[in-house]
Amino acid sequence: MSKTKEIIKKLTALESKLDSVLEKLEKLERRVSTQSPVKTKNTKKKDPVNVVKVNKIKIAESSDSILITGDTYDIKNDFKVYRSKWVGEVKGWRLMLSNIPDYEQFKEELRNKCNKLVITAAEDTIETGATVNDVGDYLDNNCMIESSEDDD
Image (cartoon, rainbow, N blue to C red; front, side, top):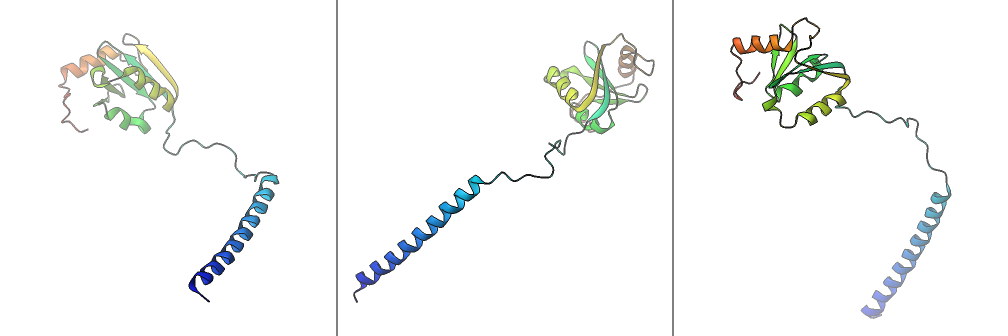
């Protein structure tokens, strides 16, 4: 038998096997499409793993800075990105508005991370009894370093 005839014989056998496989695949696809969808046990949507939800955050706004108080411990690193300073006397974080590129977006991100966000003016009193102006006076008189070299 010549080489050409051997090749044609093998190709015919392969073609026959391929037709058989395609036929079985079509039957399988028809059977799967007629079956009901598979039900999973847990259909609840889970929150992403990295989302931290804290209870209540208060923002007291002044003309050049804000003071953030409340349940801030779990998200304190979010404030450190903006070179914020912890003020122990009022138990809050002071951020200069000049260090926050988009303040509205910053507030929206905070809203997403807490159950309740309260925004007040600087004149209003916060929980500790000190006002934001008192905090500003404290910081101005006690050498607050605002350079980027300070890694707190």
